[in-house]
Image 1 (spheres, rainbow, N blue to C red):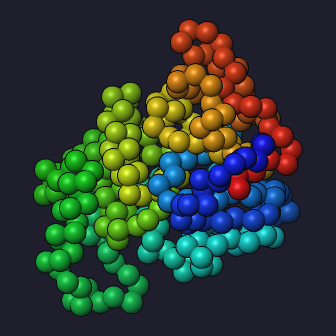
Image 2 (cartoon, rainbow, N blue to C red; image 1 turned 135 degrees about the vertical axis):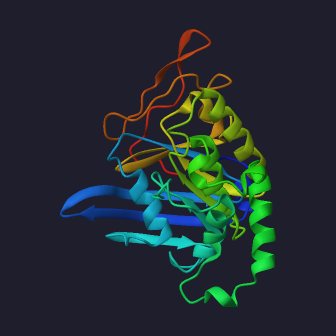
Amino acid sequence: MERHTGINLDMKKKKLVEIKNVSYAKNGQKVLLDVNFNIYKCDFIAMIGPNGGGKTTLLKLMLGLLKPTSGSLRIFDETPGKASQKIGYVPQNVHINRSFPITVLDVVLMGKLEPRTKWWQRKRDQDRREAMQALEIMHVADCAGKMIGQLSGGQRQRVFIARALITTPELLLLDEPTASLDTKGKTDFFNILKELNQKISILMVSHDLFIVSSYVKSVACVNKRLHYHDQAEITGDMLESMYSCTVEDVCPVELVAHGLPQRVLKKHDEHEHHD
């Protein structure tokens, strides 16, 4: 990818994440190779790529759940894990028993629990107010008293994000948040994310760029290596077909837009990265 010329607008923005030459291997198998990637304030990045390409691994490295084999990560100018309160994370599969008798409000309040905090030491009234505010932001405040198992898939996903928002994060990491939603549900969901993005940076793993492309500002293709495409490299108004990387270091470049095949993303340069 050609480096930016003229004034670098990114220099005016707060850098939240800085990843330099990061590689990760598991059981001798290379999962990520020489990843260079930055996330700035109010970025909205879609991370795409094949299953097993390293997308979720990269999220876990940023969260401090995994340690890189080589390279360095700085999250809010700290080592991964130390800035966890500034990050909201919603994994691909949120494990919660739908039959368990817990209300939506209590699910969101779980986001306030910390290992060293005693239940009776928490400021219950303040926590409840903050939980209701998070539910209002996600447009599901009317569900606060319902059991979590009574909600639709789209409503539950909004609740899980509300749980992540209760700590007022600056960065939101979402791992395939719309996998179980229909088209209307996805549209409604992304409209809410667009509102959040005015104040919160979002990095979202997704295979569904049919809708995502209408909202994200840039795309990161991950298949062991990471290749970043800013908005200027996307031709046409929107991507109108779902795609993912299928061969290492290569993303599909022929997609259907407005009924005609178009080249959407530039072919990858071996040394390009987001800087």
